Amino acid sequence: MKIHKFSDVQSKDIGEGTTIWQYCVVLSGAKIGDNCNICANCFIENDVVIGDKVTIKNGVSIFDSIYIENNVFIGPNVTFTNDPYPKSMRDSIKENINYQRTTICEGASIGGGATILPGIRVGKNAIVGAGSVVAKDVPNDAIIFGESAKVIRIANNN
Image 1 (cartoon, one colour):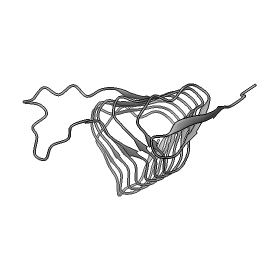
Image 2 (cartoon, rainbow, N blue to C red):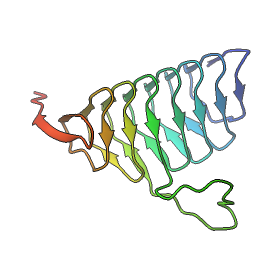
Image 3 (spheres, rainbow, N blue to C red):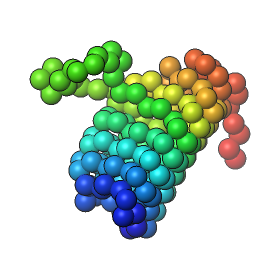
Image 4 (cartoon, rainbow, N blue to C red):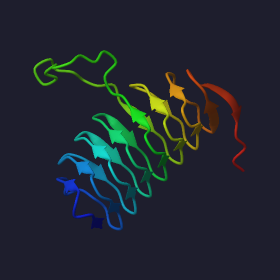
């Protein structure tokens, strides 16, 4: 494990061979697998699980209830959301908010600048095009692109 000296990594549950670059914040409850690459300027909250061999490029925040399986690529400045009704200054502990789980399944790739809404499942080996807004679940092996992204075809992964 390699953690850059300019990062604030509070979690003790980080796998072997993982690199966390400068200006990252990883909270104590986060779980990060083996051989991951967490690039500069990332934020990882408590109720987060990141599998093995995951690449998270610069400028990505992974909030509570977001689960990323093995061999996933998250492009630069991807936006994950976890609250369908966000409010300023809300006390989520007092309000007992249970965020919907967002799951990025094994082998998926999410292009830079995409936005993933709460409670979404991006299927196994799916590809989300750069800048897409994902408001519905993405099937396994689908390639999607655009605002309110739709399946454009199913990849043949033989």
